[in-house]
Length: 284
Ligand code: BEZ
Ligand code: FE
Image 1: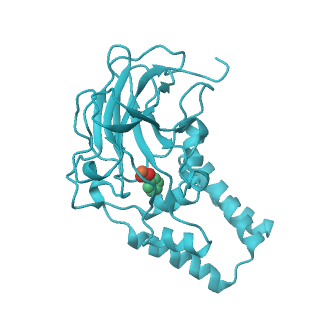
Image 2: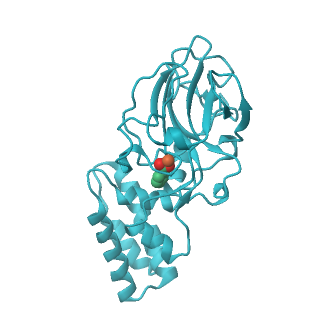
Image 3: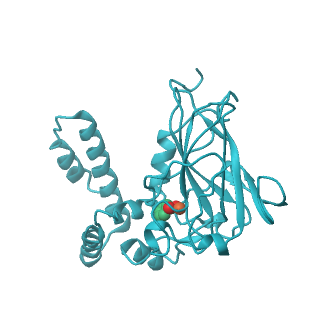
């Protein structure tokens, strides 16, 4: 790295907002260090800039290819970790992903699967409690839930599903309990037709995410929690394209017959969510 050049660039930073100055200065230092280490040819540098320009062209009001790139490089998870530190007994957060949308309000125990997947998929009962980290139940907590079908498609990707299918907004009861009935989601590929997919192929990576359900949970006096539950046994658990798997979030579905007002065999998943009280501080 030519220290003199980096210093000249840094010397011209005079940001009115000091945080902007700090962020951009660090970016300048790290990008110059990258050039110093990699020593790209001019053609390689132009190709990199063209890749970013093409990424911008993939973006639409419904698709953000830069967010997908950030997900695929583990950067969304890194930012998530930096911003959601908490006590050891909290449920860890993990990335939101691009498929969250408003869910229909549903009654406790309702089916969230109302499309053609209901006749194909493995029935599943998912239940648990919303708790504060110390185990106190959080009655009235809202549990916003979304998942893909057994063929890996969300409602927004599939004309055969109505909007709101495989989504639900639930309110935890007086013991903090929530429950819904659904079908088992499968692993699925992230959208790989844009530049994020091109990058994955160029570095020999697959686009698969292990089977999961997404949660966004809110309760008064607590930090909102965005997270997933992953299904044990999925072959992609160890190589999630979005780097969102944490061992505390993996549950093994238990085969059952009878109970939960289910006809025939089904799988049961129990998943408690422990939220961090507002004002929590390390060592506090
Ligand atoms: C998802 O699980 O919905 C997702 C997360 C990150 C990137 C793409 C999809
Ligand atoms: Fe997902």
